[in-house]
Amino acid sequence: MKLRREKNPLLKKGLIVFMLFFFFFTLSFTPFPGKLKNGFLLVSSSLQSLLFQKGNGLYEVTRIIFRTSEMREEINRLRSDNRSLYARLSLQREILSENRALRALLDMEWDEEEFIFSEVIGVMFEEGQILVRQGEKLGVKEGYPVITPEGVLVGSVIEVHKDFSRVMLITSDSSSFEAKIQGDNEYVGVLRGDNGGLLLDTVPKDANFKKGDMVTSFPQGGLHPRGLFIGKVSEIIDNDVEAFLQARVDPAFKLHDLRFLFILKR
Amino acid sequence: MKRIFIFILIAYFLAMIESGLIANFSLFINLLLLYAILFNLIENPKKEEGLIVSAFCGLFFDIFSSFVFGFYTMIFLVSSIILKLILKKYVRLPVFSQ
Image (cartoon, rainbow over all chains, first blue to last red; front, top):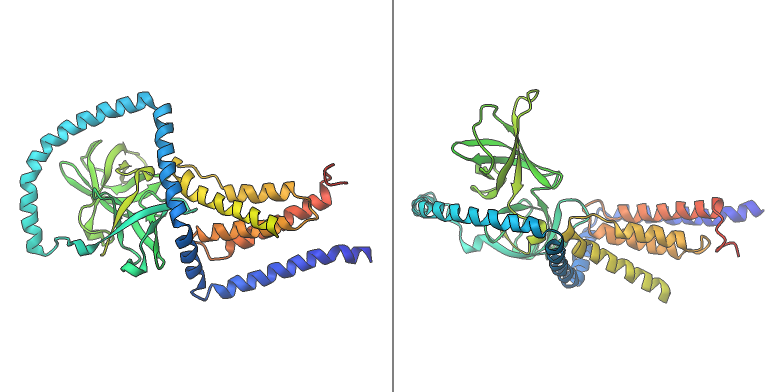
C-alpha cells in the first residue's frame, strides 16, 4: 500500500511529461511556435537591445583596464595601416570610377531599395548566431547576406520571423562558402568558421599569397554578391600531408562592435 | 503563485542577460541551466515549484534557439524530475530532514 502511494507522484509526472511531449509534437506542425517567438521578441526586444548596448560599453571598459599595452600596440599598427591605406586610396579612386562605369554597364549597381536597415538585438543561444530587427514585414528572406555599414560581410539570414531575423555569422562553425584571396594574384578556396575565427581551405598548393592579403566573397559561388570584404589572412598553414594550403583569416568585424547592419535583398 | 511568478521573472531576466549582456564578452555561460539546477538543488525535494521554474527556463531557452520548439522545455523538465528523484531517494540533507 505504502509502495503504491510512493509511485503515484512519479506516475503523475510521467503523464504530464508525456502530455507535454505530445503537445509540443503537435505544435511543431503549426505556425504557432514562430508567432510565439516573434511576440516574445517583440515584447522584450527593447530590453534585450539595451542590455546588448550596455554590455558593449562594459566590454570596452574591461578591455581598457586589462589590455592597455595591447591597445597601444594596436593603435600604432592602425596608424601605420592608415598611412598605407591613404596611399592606396589615391590609387584606387581612379579604379573606382572605372569600376562604377563598368557596373552600370552590367546593371549591377546597388540601389537604396536593395538594402534593409537593421539593428542587432542580441545573440541566440546557438554559437555564432545573432538576432536582428526586421523580418518578413520588410521582405527579409532566408539566405539574404548581411553586411556592416562599412560593407564587411557578417553572415546570412537563416530564419525569418515577422519582425525579426536570425543571422548565422560567417564565423559560425556551420558556415561554409567560397571566398577568394586578393593579393598579387587571386585564389579561390572554401571559407568556413573555425572556433570563432575563419579558416580558408582548399587553396592550391602553388598559390602565392602572404599574410595581410585581403579575403573577399566570391560572387560566382552564388551565396554572396560581388567581392564583399571579409578579412585579412593572418596565418598560412602548409601541411605536407595535406593536398591543399590552408589560411587563417582575421574577420574584419567583432561581435561586440556590431550594432547597425544592412540586409541585402538578393 | 506569487512566488512562482517572481521565480519565472528572474528566469526571464537571466535569459535577457544571457542573450544581451554576456554576448559581448564572447562567453557562453548557460545562466538558465545553472538557475534551474541550483533552484532544484536548493528547494525541498518534496516541493514542485522547481519543476515549473525549470520548464519555463527551458521555454525561454527554446525561444532563443533554432531547435524544434519544446525540445529544451522537455529536457529541462525531465532533468529536474530526475534531479528531484535522486535528491529525494539518495541524498539526505539536514535542512530537509526536519
